[in-house]
Amino acid sequence: KAGVTQTPRYLIKTRGQQVTLSCSPISGHRSVSWYQQTPGQGLQFLFEYFSETQRNKGNFPGRFSGRQFSNSRSEMNVSTLELGDSALYLCASSSVPETSYEQYFGPGTRLTVT
Amino acid sequence: KNQVEQSPQSLIILEGKNCTLQCNYTVSPFSNLRWYKQDTGRGPVSLTIMTFSENTKSNGRYTATLDADTKQSSLHITASQLSDSASYICVVRSSGNTPLVFGKGTRLSVIA
Image (cartoon, rainbow over all chains, first blue to last red; front, side, top):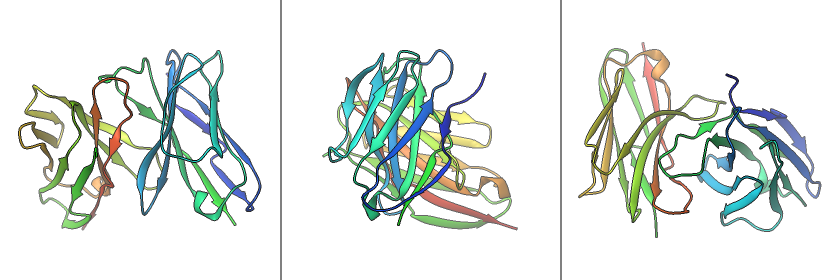
């Protein structure tokens, strides 16, 4: 069974640009969560989707948005990039968004904003 | 405010030695606590998930303990190996429709 895949793995963008990251969950998983990881802040929750609906959103500005498609694949978009957006963006999937279910993380997308 | 604090921030040990990582949390109400291992440049991988009623859980050389009364957990690594070098992240989930709360991790380096 294939794991969570994220594309691209590495990305370099310039301030002011926008970026779209993609996540394909494990087959059969319908819940996808996105996280931002930086050395100073650790892992921070961005948002969670289940069956194409956003169930939860973290404390990030509106420049960060996401969506989930009918096949459970998810994308996140960051507009008007800032230097502070440089981070590892991780996607995790689970079968359902219940509290006791295991989350499986992808390898992440390393975004560098210059 | 829901928080997870981990200590130490970093740790260096000799191969073959044991070590214990600590996690204190203020998340309430409590649903479960997870320990993840994250190798450099990779996504976190789950080691254990513990619910309120579980005190100890093992996964090979990794043993996690949970004291729900004091809101403390520890991860004990036995007979460390070079491949144990990684960040270990403690994560707590509250009940209901709430996101996970992450600690900042302990960076473990195992040297020969």
